[in-house]
Length: 243
Image (cartoon, rainbow, N blue to C red):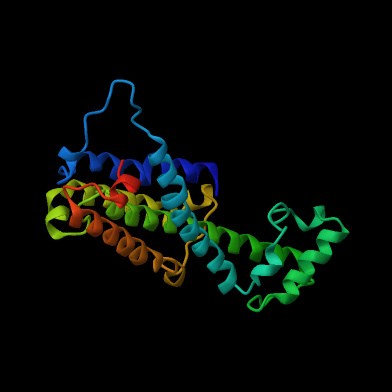
């Protein structure tokens, strides 16, 4: 995805909900945690491990699911896409013989392209449109993944999806709404979509990877349940996952 889209993620879709998490109510287990020592880091190894090996992988998988689903539905065979990333946006006139043959075979194997493979520039435009739609799907799926992560990680012990927890921090819903508006503007606002090199996508591409969210939420709620069941004892799950 483009650099500008990354800025919209870091300074937009992630920033507002993250700020609103500061208004979360304290958890039941807060008094079980000893005070931090003066030399204890705020960002611990356990936090980094869970962030990159669990949350990061889930969000990445969900985003790439949405990205690759667009290519699949646009008639591409996923196996045929290997080693095409570096030449995908190259003009046909700049191809060498191997590139010409590879992209001609890719065109012939496509099941949805209705143009002529002999018209290399028409095929080039079709590829660029597919890529722009896939990047739009990637961006929106990242927003959905952020929403799922909010409900999972807003608490470490208490349930994050109870009505009491939700209504206790309405600012978080406002932050999510702002994040959603930013995502919609990037994808569907004329001019901005051109700068970000995305293409407006149909509804069939918007939620394709969202099946991952309820699984993620369910597993997180199950983990929290087993932790709460043994409180005030700090069981194995508590020691392993709470930081």
